[in-house]
Length: 218
Ligand SMILES: C[S@@+](CC[C@H](N)C(=O)[O-])C[C@H]1O[C@@H](n2cnc3c(N)ncnc32)[C@H](O)[C@@H]1O
Image (cartoon, rainbow, N blue to C red; front, side, top):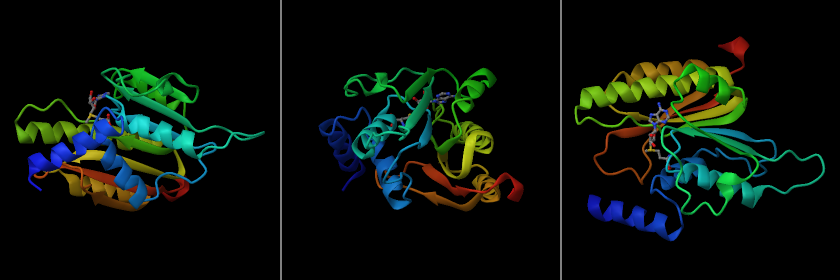
C-alpha cells in the first residue's frame, strides 16, 4: 500500500468506527501486543496526556464500558486526560461527560496542572501521545518532543503505581538512547514500538516502560 493509501485506510476506518482520529489504531495495537488493559478493569486508573481530539480516551472509555461489570464493592475504572485543545464531542455519545472521566484543558507540563492530574492518581497506566506543534525543523521538533517525553516520565515517577506501565510518543533523532536508559531504570522492561498505523516515513516512535519498579528498587 502507498503511504497515501495507508493513511486513507486508517482514516476511513476511524471514521467508520466513530473515532475522531486514526491514531486510535496505534494505541489499539500496543494495548493488544503488550496487554496494557486488564480483562477486568475494576479500580484501574489511566492518565492520557496530549489527548485531543480524543480517540485514545474514547477507546479506553469504550473498553471500560465493555469490560466492567458493576456490583457491590466493585470500584469503577477511571480515566484522566489533558490537552491544550478541547476534545471532539462528535463521536463520544456522552462518554466524555460520564463519571469516571476527568478532562483538564491546559498544558500538562505546568506545575499546577501536574499537581491536579497527579492528585487524581495513582495510575496503573500513563499514556502520552503528546506532540509539539511542528516547525519543519527536525532538530527543533525532535528536541521539543523529547521534552514532552521527559515530562511524561516525570509523571510516571510521581504518579504511577508499582507494576504500572507508561507509553509515550517520541520523535526519533534526539537522545532516545538516554531516554531508554531512564525508562529501564524505572521499569522492569523498556522498549520501542512503531505501530502499523504510523505514517510510513514518519519519525514518531513509541517508547514503553512496563512494570514500574517499587520505589525501593529505583
Ligand atoms: C497527536 S495529538 C494526540 C491525539 C490523541 N491521542 C487522539 O488519539 O486523539 C497530540 C496532542 O498533544 C497535545 N499537546 C502537545 N503539547 C502539550 C502540552 N504541553 N500539554 C497538553 N497537551 C499537549 C496537542 O495539543 C495535540 O492535541
